[in-house]
Amino acid sequence: MLCSLTKGLESANSVAQALKPYNLPIAAFSSSSAQALLDQGVTGFISTAPFLFDYVQTLVELLKLIGNSNLVSIVDNNEDSSITDKFIEIIRQLNISILEIISVDHPNIINILNHSDAQIIVSLVNKDILATIFNLNKEFNSIAKPWVSIDWPNHNNGEGEDEETLEFINQQNANFVFDNSKSKLKVTCDTME
Image 1 (spheres, one colour):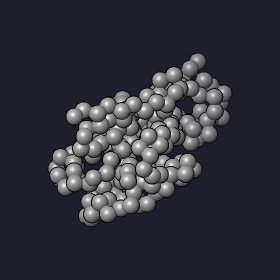
Image 2 (spheres, one colour):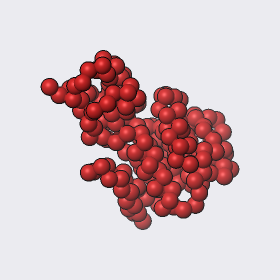
Image 3 (cartoon, rainbow, N blue to C red):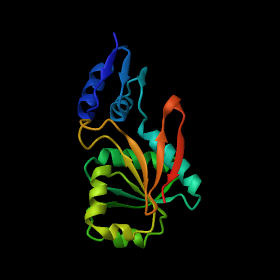
Image 4 (cartoon, one colour):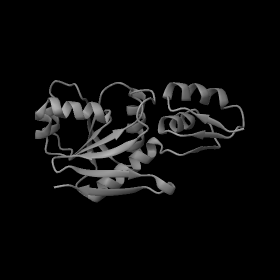
């Protein structure tokens, strides 16, 4: 018997707690489900999706490619502080320094990010919400720093898009793509001018 987890974070946590004492083969098909199993201490499961650590490792590789600094600003929307806290814990373990953590709805966010010494902004805000914010408030485009959007699937409890992405947003429309095929991390860059 193989138990497979749905994409919803809440249901994945419940199933992980229930299955922890048993030695059943478990498959996780989304990052949030896989992370829930890992966080609950479930062992011996397989996952077709990356863990939060994989996203942070990709960010480390991106910072190496850019070569400017290991100093970042983090933007979140206070929806899931457990993901933000876990992300911060992992990021610090990998020697990335966090200058500030700021909510996307902070009234002075543009000024803070523009005057920050951090050269990269890491967003834990859902990419659709972030795109809407950029479209509604053109002042966000004045921030002359690259944004890395880590679109963790926690905003709709796994319903809707299956995609978990790490994207790079800036004025030149450059995209960094997270590729977790065959358990190898790869960062590619496409620049559309």
